[in-house]
Image 1 (cartoon, rainbow, N blue to C red):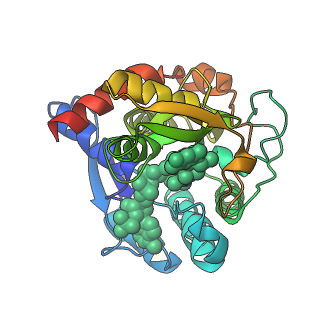
Image 2 (cartoon, rainbow, N blue to C red):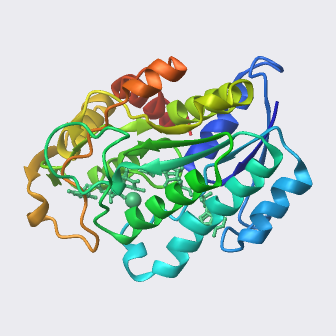
Length: 292
Ligand SMILES: NC(=O)C1=CN([C@@H]2O[C@H](COP(=O)(O)OP(=O)(O)OC[C@H]3O[C@@H](n4cnc5c(N)ncnc54)[C@H](OP(=O)(O)O)[C@@H]3O)[C@@H](O)[C@H]2O)C=CC1
Ligand SMILES: Cc1cn([C@H]2C[C@H](O)[C@@H](COP(=O)(O)OP(=O)(O)O[C@H]3O[C@@H](C)C(=O)[C@@H](O)[C@H]3O)O2)c(=O)[nH]c1=O
Ligand SMILES: [Mg+2]
C-alpha cells in the first residue's frame, strides 16, 4: 500500500517516519510519502486535493493541523482553513478515488463537563476556536463519506516538536518546583501509538469500507496534567516538586476541558487496537530524548 501523509514535520508524522525506518522492507505492508507545508500548504484546499489526485496513493493520512490551542483564539481563519477546509478537501478527493482517508481529531471538541468518559456518540461542545475548528473538520469529513476514519485522541507526546513532556523537562531544568493543573483529566497518548493506529485504520479501511467512522483512541490510565508531570519526572529521574492547582489558578487564553476522558471500546472492537499504557510509551520517548 502506498500511503500519502500530510504534516511531515509534526509529532505523529515523525512517528510514522520512525515506524517506516524501524520495520524491514515490506513488514509495514505500506510505503509512505510525506508532504510538508512547503509542498502543500493546507490553507489551499485545492492544493490538498490536487496532491492526492496527482500522486494517486492507496490511502491518505492527515497528520497536519493547526495545533496552537491558545494562538487559535485570535487566528480563527487560519485555524478553520487548516483544521476544517483542508481535511474536507482531502476527504472529498479520497472519496472520489474510493481510497481510505484517516484524519486525527481531539478531545478538545468536548466541553469537559462531567466525569464519565466521552463516547464517540456524545455530542461535542467545544470550548475554544481550536476545538471548534477540529469539530468542523470532523463534520466535513463525515459529509464527504467514503472510506473515512476520524481518530480522536488526546494529550499527544513524543520526542518531537512541542508537547507537554518536553515542556516539563525544559521547565524542570531551572525550577525545583512547578504548579501544574490538577483538575483536567485525560489520557496522554504517544505519537508512536497514534501512528501505528493510523496505519492499521488505513489498511483495514482498504479491505472493508464498512468500518468507516469516528473512533476514540487515548492512552491509559487517565490522569491529571499534574499526575502526568509527576510520572515524567519520576521516570526521568528529575527532582521537581509538582503542586496541583485548579484551572482557575492557571489562566490561559483558551479554556481547556476539565474532563477529557475518552471511551475507546469501539476502536478495540472494530480494529483490535486496545488503549496503550502511556507510562510504557513514555519510557520509550524519554530514552529517545536521551539518545537525541
Ligand atoms: N498535539 C496534541 O496534543 C494533540 C494533537 N491532536 C491532533 O493530532 C494531529 C497531529 O498532531 P501533532 O502531531 O501534535 O501536530 P504538530 O503540531 O506536531 O504538527 C502539526 C503539523 O501540521 C503542519 N501544518 C500546520 N499548519 C500547516 C499548513 N498551513 N500547511 C501545511 N502543514 C501545516 C505542521 O507543519 P509545520 O511544522 O511547517 O508548522 C506540522 O507538520 C492533529 O490533527 C492534531 O489536531 C489531537 C489531540 C492532541
Ligand atoms: C506549561 C504548563 C502547563 N500547565 C497546564 C496548562 C494546560 O491546562 C495543560 C496542558 O498544557 P499545554 O498547553 O502544554 O497543552 P495543550 O497545548 O493544551 O495540549 C493540547 O494540545 C491540543 C493540540 C490537543 O488536541 C489536546 O489534546 C491537548 O494535548 O497544562 C500548567 O498547569 N502548568 C505549566 O507550567
Ligand atoms: Mg499545545
